[in-house]
Image 1 (cartoon, helix red, strand yellow):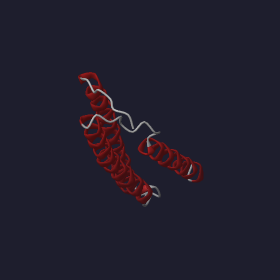
Image 2 (cartoon, rainbow, N blue to C red):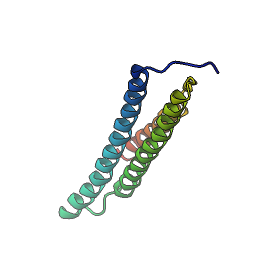
Image 3 (cartoon, helix red, strand yellow):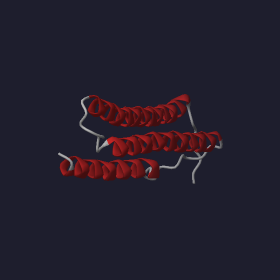
Image 4 (cartoon, helix red, strand yellow):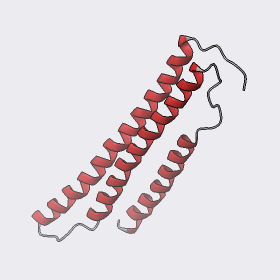
Amino acid sequence: MGSVSADAGTYFAAERTFLAWIRTGLALMGFGFVVARFGLFLREAQALIHIGTAQGSRFSVWTGTGLVLVGVVVNVLSLLRYRENVLRLNRGEMPDTSPSKLAMSAAGLLAGLGVVIAGYLLYFR
């Protein structure tokens, strides 16, 4: 690879990308928490009016927990990629410009999860 002269703007761009990934991970964790708590709320509400147990309670707890864990993985992987990019810039090398495996994996996983949730909602409507 060729040598690059990294100015402050290049480092700031890498940091902005890193912070965007951190926000994405935090949003996933927050959304996962809300999904998990909503299932518990439904179970308690149904128990109060003596309907029985909520059918979606376990599904939402597992889905919410999964989203929290995906958020954690996104934050850890973004930290590793940011560190690698800064080290490359410090050595005068060009950062990896290939498509982000993290972005493609997160998008694919969330799209798959969306299909599963849509199927669940249609099945239990």
